[in-house]
Length: 345
Image (cartoon, rainbow, N blue to C red; front, side, top):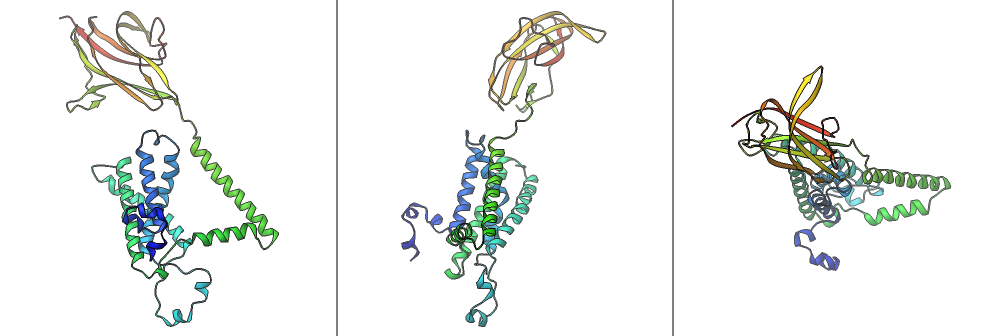
């Protein structure tokens, strides 16, 4: 019986997993590993996510779908050229597809299935985001894999598709180490070197991606009626000493850890001949966040100016590191401001 020939470690697996053929078990394992690499902190920022994500999107859904459509072993090699007498006498029947056709169709159907899933998600409340895509593609792939498993199990063992691992390894060994001619040997070596170079190039590109533009996002937000932060509804009219709420935010896209300083001031300014002069200023709170690459910091704070007047400039200055003794808009790394009116109590 099949249970007697299974390796001992399979006995520790759930029955549903034990029933999976080796190729579909690999499909399920890749789906699980891809989902984990996309959601686990510390792993999702590494190249592992890309290495697993590419076959997850470009090959695996189609392979599972083709496995469900064609559970039969395909005709290949001499079997297709010389059918037995029993096969010749038997009625014609579909014998599935061979390995090359299966691989080609897997790529093609994956390229069709994943965009269709994305299109369907676009018309749902979840939209095209990471988690809905992961759940949808994973669910489709797992369902197709289990359908394929059931359909193979319903066939005679001799008619089921199975990946001929040992045959491929033996054929590759013969081609590489026992070529018919020196020309075949040279071509085999050239092919092996080309594959190694291609894999190495892709691996290097994934492991050492080109660094994009370095910048820092600096912004002001307010809290909307529903509690969400929005770039709208900024307070413009203040009463001296009475606080108004604002949210200042920084997002580090510098590809390195950066220590920032945020300086706030209320300034009375004079503008003439395209030049702005600060006549008087009042210092506000300072913040000093340290952010890793791609990390965001926000801080809600209460602005309560005592400097009164019209057209005062509520200014936020961002510095990398410590600010100079006299912070100005000219020496700041980033600058934000609001024009406000402050009346006396």
